[in-house]
Image 1: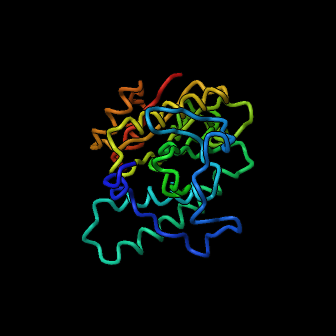
Image 2: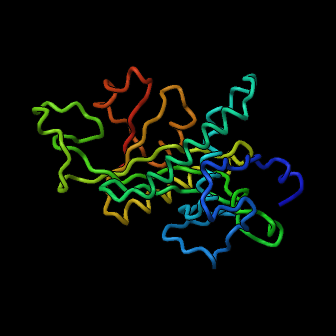
Length: 245
């Protein structure tokens, strides 16, 4: 990586002691392909999309989400404090989701700059430049899409193990200086590939109606609006999109 690109890399604040795990290292070296035992991985150009395994990678994902959440709030006083608070909560939430031993499974996917001689000193934290969550869920009795208004009695709206499974994508973020390089697209493609390994046939995602950039991205991959869901999401100004795989 050139010195100019290094100067553009996002600043990642150190983790708070309250979130620190016993094996957390801010200076942990970026793992190589040989060191990583990744079930889901997709290489493209000088980047790799894969599942996150290290706490350092989950913290980097949380920080990127904090950066994106507060991206248009540069005039807010003590902005770094708010970002850190957001990242701390998100870090705990990601760890909880990914470690849950329930019917719902969550995989945190990250994108990183490939390790090579030019950036051999990169840390596990600083190599991460994009993230999303992929959740494997099951529909409730009577549902054909998530959070559907079910006409059957409320007693039917319960979890049953034999209900169809689906995948749900959330928290898609790419660091500001690494956008328009195919990173979001390849993370989504990896999410699709990972979902198929769980026998998933349908993936859902919510997107804001005024976020035309995100809508175009999902459309290019094959996501389509679920018209029946729009009534429920009007108040949130969102569309529910679906992809058949």
